[in-house]
Length: 57
Image (cartoon, rainbow, N blue to C red; front, side, top):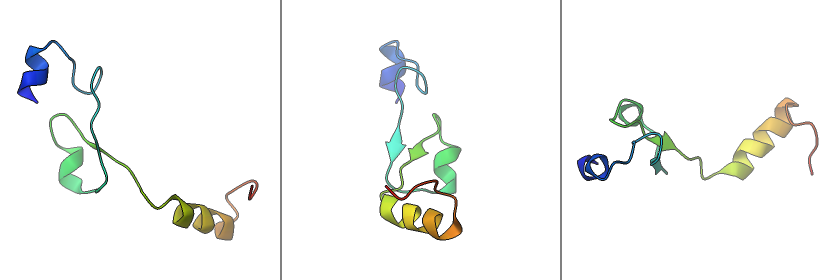
């Protein structure tokens, strides 16, 4: 990441980082790393069961 700073890019602004794995240390990294949940169907079915999803389209 130091090379990106030398290129004039602002980490967390011009350049964002994402990971497919979530962990507490990622949130405290410099720059912070966003985690992506790769199980959207499971999230949706949980929302439907809880009644938090307006429509099941």
